[in-house]
Length: 278
Image (cartoon, rainbow, N blue to C red):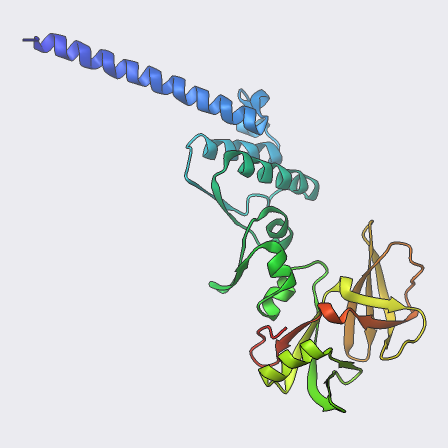
C-alpha cells in the first residue's frame, strides 16, 4: 500500500508534467499560427509596437490557436486603411481555405461580402432578405433592397407603369418607355402588376453618340474615372442613371448621349412589395 507521502509526491509530479506538456503544446500552436499568418518576427514585440494590420493578424492568431469549430469575424477589416483592407481580404480568404473552418464574417461592406464569401446572407433590421452565392445574389436579387445593396455603383432603379400597346407590353416611365421582350412580358403579365420598379445595372446601360430607335437622350452630369473604367452619371428630367464605360471614351460633362439597355439583363420588381418579378 502506497504511503500518503508517495501519493502526494506523484500527484505533484504529474501536475507539473501536465503543465509543462501543456505549455509545450501551446507554444507549438502559437508558432504554427505565427507561420501561417507570417508574423513570426512579431512574437517578441509589445502590442503598442504593432501596426493596424499586424494587430489584426495577431488577433486572428489568438483565435486560430484555440482551434475552434467556427470562426466569427465581426467587421475584422473596418479599422484598416483602404490598401490594407485589400491585402487582408486576400489573406483572410486564403487562411479560411487552408484551415477549412466554417467562418461567419459580419460586414457592412458589400465588396468584402462579394469577394470573400462562398455564400452571402443579406439582412435588414434583423430579417434575412436573401441567401445565396455572391453571383446569384448579384444576378437574381430577391428585392430592391438586395439589388441596391450589392453592386458598385448601385443599380439604377426607376418606377414605371405597365401598359399594353398593340399586343406588346410596355413600361412607361414618363420620360421614356420600354417595350418588353416576350419572355419578360409573360412574367410581368403573370404577376398582374400595374406598376413596377425597373432595375438596370450600370454595366447594362448602353451608350451611343447617335440617336437610335427607342433610345433615351440624356445629359452627362459627371464623369468619375476609377482607373480601369469610368462611371458616367447622367440625367434627363427626374430620371438619373449611372453607367460603366471604358476609360478615356471621350465623354465629357454637358455632352448629350443616347441610352438603351441590355434588355435580357434588366430586373423588374413589384411596385408595391418591391419583390422580384424578373
